[in-house]
Image (cartoon, rainbow, N blue to C red; front, side):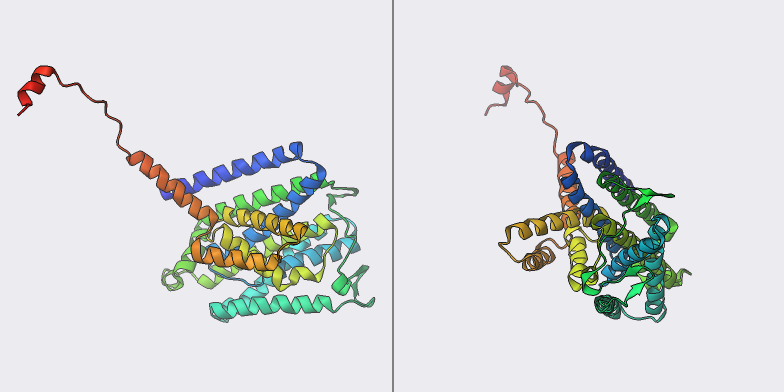
Length: 353
């Protein structure tokens, strides 16, 4: 099986598992557990957004939480002013995408190096954190939506069915919407990566100079990749605001940005399934540590990052894939069992010394 066929086979298996979970989990879980699974799906969308721009576009963004927070705050402010959630849902995707496009244009067309890329994105995130954190007074409001400063925005109206403001989504409906968004994002990115545009994006990551010599402007494709990653992170931010009906400046914080990077490294850079696995594993582990209060969660996350960077640099999913592939090849190359043939007594006597 060639590499292309293996890639699409793994994508088909991932989608099949995702669809099975989408329709199977609500039947075997209570509402509380389903709400916990929903936040895993929300954060998985956020992890996939960074996995795409970093693993396939070669853009290490330390400020992916900026687009996540913008999506969350955009939805909260818009829905509290408009009432119906249809337009706010779209704005929560468009506004972070436009912000990413503007920021990416300055970075890529300014020909800044990768080091400056990380510094600028991280700085933008910290600026947004301090900006939102300093809006605690009653005068800080946009329309009828108070920003709330470090207290955040509580009582955010939940998504409703389009055009039907009074029919809001139940926790089970929100799970279906969130998980469906995760599957659509995964499928859409797989199709994009397999297309001509996706191949140019990956090629620009591998060798930008060669892409330029072939007649492609690598900056355009990097900007497209960065903008799409911002839009996906904004979608995750919108769903996060709906999950808890609350948002606060902490989603812009350094800890949130670091967690996204850890998800990608642990799950496997260069894959789309890996960050989902890494996100779920790290989120579950963090929640377990928080309930027991035996260890510091940040210390554990730091130790996990060091272990994976030193011992499992490719991440969980690529390493498991290599092990499965190695076992499959050994099984195919193993010699078939040949039954022993009995030697007649006369022949044995003739050959005896």
